Image 1 (cartoon, rainbow, N blue to C red):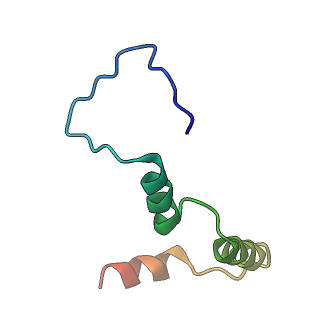
Image 2 (cartoon, rainbow, N blue to C red):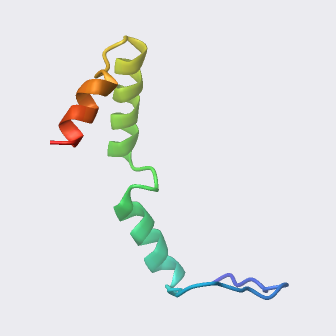
Length: 67
C-alpha cells in the first residue's frame, strides 16, 4: 500500500473524520462523485437534451421546489 509523508502540519478548525482510503473511495462512488458507466450515460443524455434545447424553465423548477 502506498504511503505519503506529511511535510507540513495539518490544522483543522472543527471535527474531522478519518477513513481508510478504500472506504473513502467506496463512499465517493456511492455519493456519485466517481464516474460510473451509468452516470456517464446519464450525463451524455442530459447534455444531448440541453444541446437540443429540451430544458425545464427555471421558474417551473423553482415552483416545484417550493411546494
